[in-house]
Length: 277
Image (cartoon, rainbow, N blue to C red; front, top):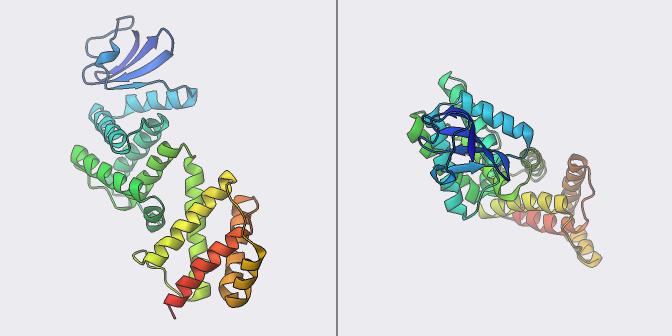
């Protein structure tokens, strides 16, 4: 490879014989280099082939704007995540999460408050990613000296889940907001207050998230009509509430929800309702 452009001492854009333009990051990899100089891949801590031109330009701009120490810290964070989950993360996270956290730190320095109304839903839906995000932000605090608010854990957890599953971040945000709306309807109808430390509540919230994922994938079966009929007459309040929740899902997702979900939801809701009587 040969250098196309030196962005700073730790980042260069290079030309690869097969991959065309690539981004290399590593301590001192750009020091003393100029256009046309050879560069050895073995000296790079990270090797990016950003095939999406828009992402490529966005990351280049970030590398120019962001402090070298911050880029180094983010590289450490990516290594931590890859070691933790034993995967090679989708490269999009390098752009999206670096961009998100750089501006989050900037807002915090300016005294702007960062709120996350869906923190509990995110923790219950993606517990492994949530704990990884907590540890990542602790490392970022060590690097920057800037205390990160708890709400950021949820935002970072969604970025991590996106990188692991390659699900769009927008889809995850929409699902999290939808689950929050479903919970409000459940609390209002059953006159309960959801407690995320309660095991039954945790199961219900996880079930709602998993339901949305199954619907999105088209991955679901069906239940015998006889079981639906039994639940309809045995637990009419929870059964009717289940249909209202399904209607909310259908309207939000703009796709049909299988009737089999009525069975699962009714059983979860009845368990919840019985515990609060």
